[in-house]
Length: 228
Image (cartoon, rainbow, N blue to C red; front, side):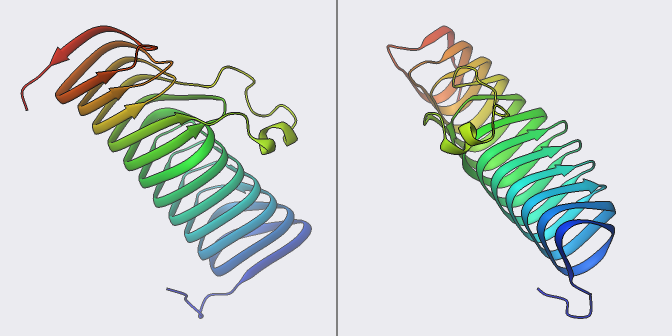
């Protein structure tokens, strides 16, 4: 809900501003925010550098966002690159681009295409992601996970080599969830209820409760069926 008692912040061109509490934040160009910022809505077209935490109920980014802190939102739409030195927490995230976090990523729903690197735990209720490069996470914990290979994106070429030019693959140590459907994934352990190991996967051990399907083009070294 908007708070009209709070001021709006609009920045055009190349600018620097202090952090604070705002109603609407609208950035067009190249901007630096010194200090934590919270807002009802935050929209950025261009480059935004945050020297602190960033929190917004609604967030829309078209370009490049770098956060030297934690990021929190209710709804976020990202077309571009997000680099975070802390953790990310939110409800619904739509991603078309690159997400790189040193900390954890905790969302209720993550739908997107591109690449991601999460240094800690990636936790989601529902996650559907199309790989367009190398994606990595320490661990993934979900209710429902679908990973597909979607090819190289146009934006990836336009960003001039920012996107890792490696094979399209998800690399993770452990994946846990109720429903897991994977393609082109390398993992030490996959643990879930219904598990589908698709084409291009290389899994050390699969532990499943309800059902397991393994594609002929996948490798699973060990399978274990556990009690429901």
